[in-house]
Image (cartoon, rainbow over all chains, first blue to last red; front, side, top):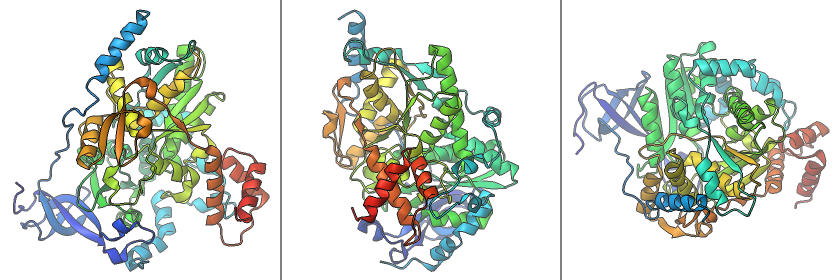
Length: 105
Length: 474
């Protein structure tokens, strides 16, 4: 469960809208044109702010960026997951095949 | 059509001025006409020889990666190839570079130039390995670094491969600016360049592309030492064109003029690259036709005035493979050769196994890169993510797959079959694009025709024919 409120100096993420749908480039597919262009930036919070409130952060390069607080202490949760079908047996089958080929089979 | 916002409009109007400051060079000096420019002058403008580039890279911890013979994969191919067929397979293990891919070669030169010119930091727009490479090299050079990524769909769902690359950039101390889907990312990059005064470490600068020439040169020399001759074929994973361009130029510089350059991309036909809905239905974020075709047929769509990566000049053949085939060979490479590498970099490997089968045993095929792997950037992660998005994953005949709807893992290596993309059609498409970007009514001169022939690796006669056909409205 994400923290409800950041502390000053905490590593956080803010979000803001760069372009509203009406301001977006021409020639976009309809699904993209209907959405705002959004940006997410991480940095050190400059004040104690609740999620969803306006917040200023100082980024790793020292820029000051304003946005809506979208995460406190954002981390990484990407992974490998379970073995997908059809993958696990490939090594076993091909090693056997190679052995058989080399044995003249 | 919606009117562009005034801020984006104002930035785009200042594009030339912002990029001149951010690149530290003026591309106007290379222009010869609305169509032609002096490509070799652009490539040589940085003033570094190949030896000097190699020296800069060695000091940066880049290059000199192992060239490995894949004896088990070669025998696997020979087990089903026609008698006397099954070329020897080799791979250049570019994952051994500091940030895990050949992109370190590009980044090392960009960062070197940025430091020499006295910039305080660098900015690159990339969702790929190049971001990590720039971040790593910037850290070594004590430069600030901002990486701008197209990372999320409108539901803030990130492609696992891109999420992992953001992590690695942040591990190297970069600021990562992440955007939702859309080409307006470029205007935001201009805004950042303008606001910070940093160097534009473009993927498509002559510095970056020159950095890849050492890869082609190294592998030609290493193959000479190992087999007595340069390779018969070099297979290159192709996206924006830098890999094909730099590798081919390096091979030529090493005197490997008979080596056939084969570019290979994952087939993502039918998926729209600017579509919010399609964004996370792709299981590859690079090395695919969504970049490979548009960048080959109009390289100057890049973020620099003239793209140094001009793949049509160098590719002898362009092959496509399916997502399922690449995931299959990724697993095979790990299990049979003890090399666990990222799927995108194995695109060329899938094409190489298909090619090797049709070549005599004396022939040699070099896959010129690998990339690092890890959480997110892995075939398991991609296949699980695809299934969660409703993409069907099954075992069967990979030629039945439909990008964005199904991924078919081959049942057996015999089913690896790369498909030839029509190069003649790509050349025509390039000429059409070049004419369309010239002012209305502009008549191409003889110099333009000669330039277009060079830029498409064809003849002035073939270009004239295309120009005439276009004028006749065909």
